[in-house]
Image 1: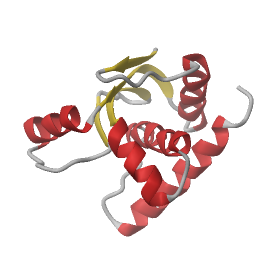
Image 2: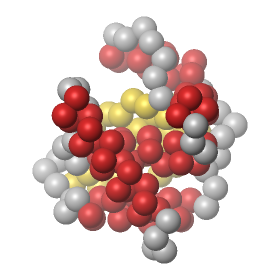
Image 3: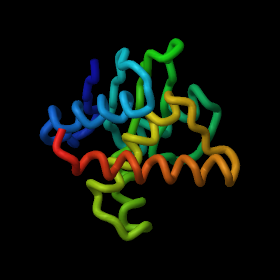
Length: 139
């Protein structure tokens, strides 16, 4: 099950398309879908989570809480829509493309990909691009 929640004015359009895409990402990594919750919020909301749960006093675009067990992918993915908007401008990409990147990023963490060093970050970026391309393939 994939759920979309909003703690701000942002609402994801065409949920079914995103649902099928996320399912396809998980299947492409030979994993099974458990329950993944996407929570869209603003900077203030995500900053509070970052301070309270991770003891980081910084803004971020995504925080994921991984509840994966074995090959069954589950977790809560919090996304700051404000950070996605700013990142899209900084990276000179469309908002929708940057949103796909962070949505895929959270699920890829659950699939075992990391981004703490240069090599792992490069692989994560490659996987993000691969999964973004999958969105444009008819589900």
